[in-house]
Image 1 (cartoon, one colour):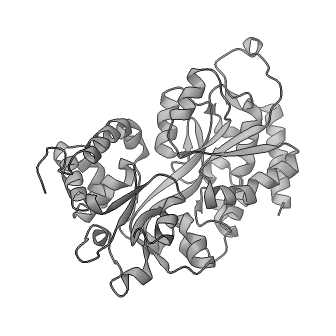
Image 2 (cartoon, rainbow, N blue to C red):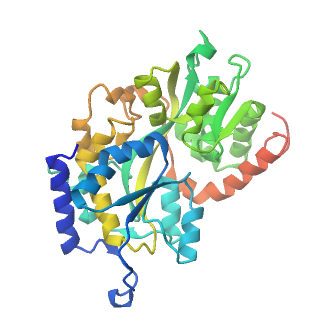
Length: 378
């Protein structure tokens, strides 16, 4: 699977390592203790997603660099990273982040800053600054994939009454059965407002107001007793396979193989999809600073990002990669024009600011009798 493009990208990244500072370091080099060499540890989301990363660029990187790379799994957030940095016991090096968590981690000083000028150009010669999609570069991260949260549903269970709009997810009278939702206010609150008639472009302005939050939680009251909450990316498929739900929120790429390759009786509703960018970041205090950035350079190259689409239907963050994506794969990507009807891009900056407070409100709502934030029934 290793290609000439991959070898060229790796050679260029190694050359850049020797000539350009990779990380903005706060401490003078002479004050840093050089730790014994250890393997690079990459942390991602497990399941089909980690499989796609292993096949597209982790295994090729091991082969081409001669460096061993460990893969570990987490469910997102900053808890483990904060503990490692605060105790000065950093064991993770490169982490796959949701964009809002990446931004918040950078603000808190939990991540290294990255010099994007050291990233190689695309295979077509386009400079990296012009080759990545808007929003892919943040002070502490490099975007890699475009993914989305969609509604996945059981065709057999619903029969002829398949959902056709996001509002149908919240209509348990017309579409009876349990729903699966990630236990996180992200997406849940946006979906509630869109289903209640708020235009996607007005969602975050509405959530800024107390009335808007009350509206969102009141919509959720209508299905609260019909929800199975999930946390790991593999959970939605498990909930469908076990007939615990008839429809569920899911990360679109996790449904690709079950539907397209395995022929399971499930389908995706793209209406109201919430799309986002996943990014690589480096944990502050990593003993593998230069190895970590070398891996990021390779993994976000034109070829490896295109290769990943063979195994999971997430869009590459590099524009030059799309020329290498198979035509039969493109309709399954979140960025396909036909999938963008009533789509909403996550406002990562907004969530970086509001996630902690709204998670508290969300958990308070879960613990309550399901009567919104003010206690009045919808």
